[in-house]
Amino acid sequence: MNFWQRTLINVLVFLATAGFFPDYFHVSSVWVAFIAAVVLGLLNMFVKPLLVVLSLPITVMTLGVFYLFINGFMLEMTSFLVGSSFEFSSFGSALLVAIILSVVNLIITNYATQNRI
Image (cartoon, rainbow, N blue to C red):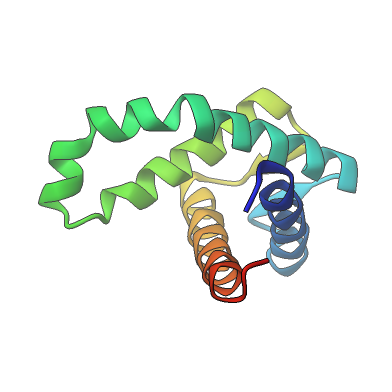
């Protein structure tokens, strides 16, 4: 799956999650969700590999659970860069959105590889 397809999926997940959990996660518009998805994609491309390598010992010790905290931190960085129109009420809500985003991307990616989209 290419960058723009994944970005579109992230936009839809951001909007749906903000609709389901309005007390925990706020997205002011579709365009803000699109900007946040692009920022998240760029952070995942450039910053996340460095964080994964630096946190490899603790990720191995926790059997990969710490990877979710890295995803939550990436969402918090996205929130910081995008501004107040894309924000989380706490780090726990960022973890919740990270888990939802990971599960949806896993399902979509698995479906795309099986069906060669």
